[in-house]
Image (tube, rainbow, N blue to C red):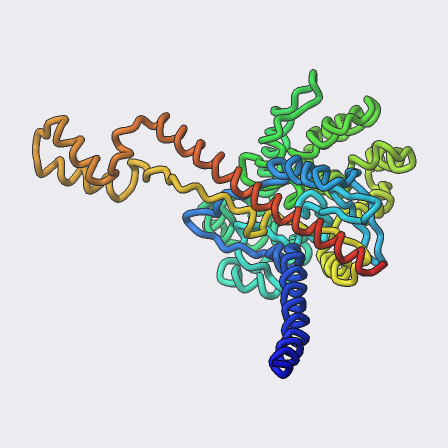
Length: 440
């Protein structure tokens, strides 16, 4: 009897610590960090594909919900908190000062380096150098690449890309000089068209431009990824610069449009676009020194412009790719907790269960025409039978009904994605709190 009691006690002395260890491990495992650099899927180089990318959750969709998670967890938040950690300098989208917990929506804080890392979806894999990209064109014409091209975007004079489509006139030109001149003219005309298009969308009475044109221009180029003035007008309007600054910008635009010599127009346009694309104008408003620098850049003597103050503040307030590594290190060390969230994160994919039926202008439409031709004068019932066989029950709905159903499914899928992201942010906050407490 005594032996059995001793055995029972001895067994419990071994089992109980093991059980506690397992429970402790499970608790630690449940409080893990769901946000690391690898989860952002950056660097991202998309390939061109016929079906396009799936719809994704944007910062506008998610930020309000994520901020409410912080509040529900008892955290007071500040927006656009500047953070400096060694060489890393960026602006956290939302941040709590007490626990040093926040998140950064990467696409809202792109620096010049990060914009190049993310790339342009229609370009495919990025070139490592000019010589690599040169191979794509060596059978067409020998361009002076380094003199004419600033980056890979300059190889494309239309949204479909120079590699895939170019004006047939280009191939009828004989000399290299003629081809170079034609290329420049095409590019300048394209930029002019974009400029006029953006100004046409700009409501001078309200000082606004519709957001859909700012973030999704007609040619599919986003302002941060291309030197486009389209979204920049909107930036200045939305952050309410004073009338002097708006007038300076308007004067600059008008001066650019009056140039007759295309080379001069191009150089001046690029200076202005480079300035406005890389400057975080929101922060210039609160800083008179930088606002003065901004006005000095927009002067008539455009050759004397000094872009360094604006580039300096841009580097301080935006995120470059190497800084993601510092964010990871801070999370691991427990020194600072900033969750990197990207539009490219797999958790941001919105995939509705309902898919719109294929349009009538497809290979199936040829099948329909062939069958109707064989049948001669087909009755309406026979035509409906063919359509129903090819398109199923969706053919019985009107296009408006199909799109309403599709949008309903999109909204439902988006709600699920936001809910999943909220749960991950909540888990991140609790993990950060636990890790912060363990360090004290």
